[in-house]
Structure formats: C-alpha cells, structure tokens
Length: 587
Image 1 (cartoon, one colour):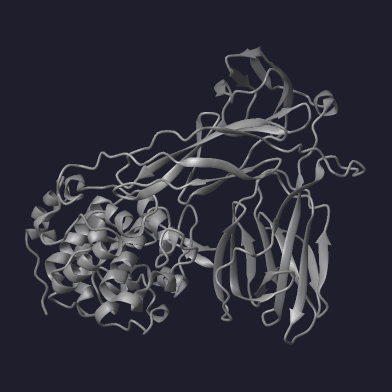
Image 2: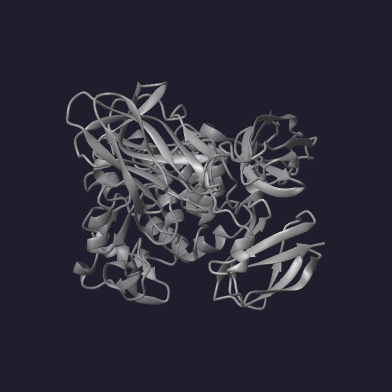
C-alpha cells in the first residue's frame, strides 16, 4: 500500500497542548484509575487501530515519522548519540534504506509468542529506525537502568538518557495494545514495587525523560496512518494513574476527576513515624500510609528540615549520615496531582558510634563493617536462569544467568555464566567475604572480584560450602562491587556477601608533608561559605573532621570558586583534594 500523510497531524499536535484531552479520547472516563482506566485505553487503541502496518510499509513510514526536525532528509536513529561516529550516529540520511534497520524495541524473541514481523512485530508505534550494527549489538537484551549513552550495562541494555523515556512509553503502549504477549517484565529488568505488572524502571524513565516534540511528531504521523495513538506520548501522566509511582507530567489536568475541577484535595498526614533500624551511617523509617481521593503517589522524607529522599512505599532508609549524631525526621505525602499533606510529627534518632570495632587493626581506616547482602529480598523463587534485580538495605543488586530457588544460610542465589553487581555503595571497601558452594556438577573454580571495574582478586569455590575472603582491597569513596563466575557452566550457590568500610585516615602528617598551593579564605569560615584557590579544573573537595570522618563532598569545584558548606558544627576540619589538603576552622 502506498502511504499517504495529511495535515491531521498538525491539528492533533495543537490539541495535545490543551488542558483537556483531545476528541480522540472522547468516551474515556478519566475519573477511573488503575486497571479500570487501563481497560478503557486498551479498548480505544484497539478499536481505532484500523490499518495494520506491514513490515515492508515501515520502510516508507519511518522516514516520515522519525524525520530529524533539524534536517528532514535525515532520520533520528534510536540509541544514537554521536553527531558523526559510525554506529553511534544520532541522525542519518534515510536513503538508501541500507543505512538503517527496523529495531524491535520489544525484542521479538522475548515476547510470548514471538512477535514476528506482522501485527505487533510491525506496529508503527513500536518499531524505530536504528543503526544496523547498533541494532545487532542490542540484540534481544533486556532493558535495564543506567546513565549516559546507550549500551550494555549490568547484564542488560541501557537505551541512553535521550531515549529511555521513548522506550518506556513504547513498552507501555505495547502492553496495552497486545496484552500479556508483550508484558513489560518480559523485556525490562528490575523490581515491580509500584504495580506488580510493570518494572519500576519504566515508570522512572517516563518521568525522568519527558515527551519531546520529536515523539509527538512521530505519534501524529503513525496515528495518521494506523488510526490509533500512543496515549502515553499524549499524556505521560496516564502511566502514573494506571500504575502509580512518581508523578509524570500531566498535560490534561482538567480531564481528570471526571473532567471537572483540577484536584486540590491534599492527602491525609502520615502518622506513627518511627525508626525500624539505626546504624552508624543510616536510619530506616516506617509510617502509617496516608489516604487521598486520587491516590498516594509518593512520600518525601526530610532530615533536619531539608529534603533528603523520596519513597514510593510507607518506609524508607536515609543513608549518608554521620555516626553518633542526632537527626530529626519527618515525612510528607504527595498524591498523583502533586498535592502535599501536612508534615508528619517529627521524630529524632541518634546514629550509632562509627568507631573502628577492631582497634588492633594496623590500618585505622579499614575494618568498620559497611554492609551485607543476605539475598532475602530477591524476587520470588524461580528455577530458570535469567536476569534478576532487587533492592536490599538501600542497595540495588543485579544478577545475570541466575536462579533464586535454593537456600544456604537462608535464601541464596545460584550464578552460572553470570555475575552479581551492586549499585553505588558509599564509604569505600576494605575487605570482602562471601559464602560459596559448587552444586549439582562441575569442577572447582573461582569468582573474580572487581571494584569500580578494576580486578581486586579471586574467590575460590568447591563442592564444600565455605566462606572465602579478600583483604586489603582498600578503595575509598563510592564503589561498585562486581562478582563474576569465571566458569561458563559451573552452578555456584552464593550467600552472605559482606564487606568492610575503607577510609584513609587523615592526620597532621598528611598536612606536614603537603607542599600546598591550596588556599581557603576566609579562614576561620563564617556563614558556612568560603572561597578556594589552587585547584585543578573541576576538582572534588572532601571535608573531614579531625576523627577522619568524611562529612561532606563537593564536586566540580574550580579555583576561586565559592563553596557552600552544610551546617557543620564549629571546630577544626580538613579540606582535601586529590593531591592537597589544608586545615580550616568553622566558626
């Protein structure tokens, strides 16, 4: 069929910016929420999908729907990020067609049944142009969270900062249009805490990467040909109402609550705020959930009257606290319309003393227990080998080629031809131990430990369950732990990962041996502000107290910059850069 395009797209674009839903959505009851609203949208986009695009027709459709707004002879290639470089190119001529591939964002083989190249495998709202080699590199890998440009990370595929919102809204459309054949957890990694039928990462991307004019353009062009639209491009907030989580942009505020006045009713105040765990550097909190006419979207947690973190359940862990310090906490509830509750009653908690529990340790900066992973928060027991992701004690863990149905000292994970990787962990790492056991069959082997991508040693395993350890790792600051099975076939049971902190002790010797060009003024410091000289470009400054505890980090500081401190107690502190340090007094 020869494709025809009209000016209908232009008129629809104008409607999208209105305060109410355009006429396409007449008949949808926006007073509904959750699955009820979802089913209304399913009915709409199925009923209006009057023309089924063929795989060959995509060669005509995509150059128009994905035309580069800055150069209409080009098309924007999904996952691309370079202005010129080969497979990473962002914009490229649409002719000849050998310049690009038709990328199935929902990989064909991950659907059940396989999408093929008809129906869902040729839907114009689904397929995007991509570089041929980049399309091959992505293959059928599950999506996972990341940062920066597109590529493989943590056993999955990160679509890139520019494209993650596009991917989320495509996968949401596919789920509504084709149901469980395209269930989001078949293609995206991670936990599902907001709603059991969609991974949190897609909700997150829908918020973090708002709809662009380019997305609106292609939604209009595809709708002009197929008849149906992607509702999540027209209004990302629909995802919030259906699945919960952080509130996305609402482009039709007047369409919700039955099309009447915008929601202004604030949630009830969170009650019964209390601590559930107190450590040297963290405090865990819980509270009784709020209620609201339109549903609770999130809770903001405040520490010492300053916003600290957001939780999407009635509990949270506040990290990065100083030992032996008293803090005040309160919580504010927010509904899906952004209305905020009154502050909860504040409570106080004092963190534990973070002193070295092993005073005989020759390195005073090493030895403080930093954390453990006991695998109790893993996804439900499952005997298949695949990607797994979960969060425990504020750390997100990703495991590849792993199963979750066995026990050791409690729940444990089996890793075959894969790895276990943490999210970023603060306070460094001095040593690491883990309990390992070879099960079923195979020969003795090793796991490789990497910290921030650098190999730090091998951990041996055999058929006898034993705890093995690597000492003297000694990496300061933020770290990412990665344990990789060096065998491609051994099935190894893992439990009780534990590591110690590492922080090089600062003292007067550091200063006396320091040939300083670093200057802080005024010194003493008043009003929590000072200027600094003698820096290299975009340096990181660490502030330590005289006990050697890191109390603040300021990044991307240049010489003659003005630096703002947290409200630190009066006293003597050490300002440290990568190569220099100096004493300051805070009044």
